[in-house]
Image 1 (cartoon, chains in turn green, cyan):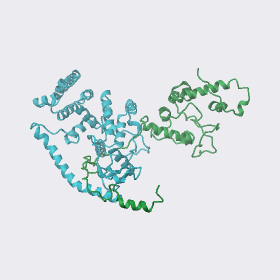
Image 2: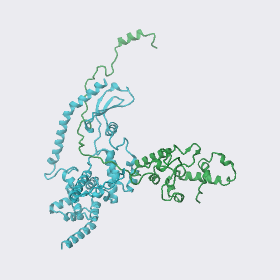
Image 3: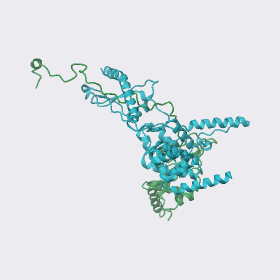
Image 4: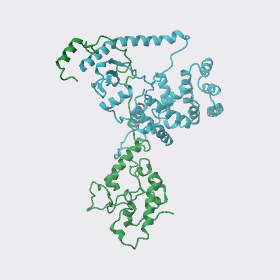
Length: 218
Length: 337
């Protein structure tokens, strides 16, 4: 059975079921809340180990179809030009802001370096450059997570990227120079200073010194 | 005192430098002269990758597909520029594009694995326990090649030794960072990641990344290249590398391993008979003691006869090669008639 899509005001309950907010005091909706919250928690746990399964599920296709997750998101701001930085984070402690960003509003979307289909939605297919957060609408915290995940995916070879051309002409690989070739070991010679090796102290001198400091020796 | 020690060891190395150069020259001359004296008179030196004729054959086999070399890559987009040209100017532009492509397709060197550096320059027991960390002394003079740079390490036990190859690469990357090279190798080059990338048919990307990251004679470079070539040979996906700078390396690897079967059949399927003939010629040069080479030299064979000899002797799938040769002869006879 598919989990039902959660009503808007139950986000806090879904993400943090242990927290009691003032909204849950009204009992009219109470018979429905526990089962929905339990299903949401189960969904979170279900996709925790394999976040890429969510992008193939019917729930995802019903909600987003083939367009990217940020396509139907619109930021709320004054005036025609949006602020050049998106909000710092949508979730502060227990509270979720109004109109959360495309990644924070759907708890099943998890940013992970192996979740290649999700990461590719945030990279331009023509230039290979990441989209600016003012275009996608994600909060700064999630954008940082995205940058790290895309970097990790490129390091593991899961995401293709352009490699610069390396020129090999004009280099000498004979390894004949002494810096990298083998040099014979240095001949053992007399030490640089005569006192380099351990010296046996003179017995009379030692006795004299011991006599002067007799009071302080144990 | 430490500076004097370093100076003393450096001066010793400098004095030894001339002696070793003479020694090395003598030893190289001896090594060169030994095979020709001991073996029979018509034995020859094994052809190296950088020989002119070998490079010539490999560049011819690799091909020059301008469409593939200059395919659009993902980069910052600019508005397109349009030029009006006469036919002559167009020819000139195509010619310069061909030269640029030849420069881009110049093959990276194939070198034997480098010998490890294990030289101790001085043992100073008096410095034992002076510090808990190693000291790395690097020569950061600007105008010397990296392979002539002295990098020495003073251990806490007091030994002054030359840095090993891995340490050298790391320290040179710290002081003279190079393009897209990283300080530690990215996880692409581990076995599991390589398998995933090969499943996506991105062998060329892996080889490009390998060239950026490692030196051509390091063990990692050789291991990654060997793994890539093995996978290509197993899957038969020779076409992925066909117009790139890595095709020469692939062919050289297969010829040295004597497993050119799959490649010859792939060439016949693509109707590249001249390439197949050159490949068998290269095989004969590299393995002059094999049956094919001896039979070819005895019969003075050339062209399609070489392929027939190869199909008879060394190939496991001889039937296919003979069929393809017959079909080619028929079509050439029909076209001539």
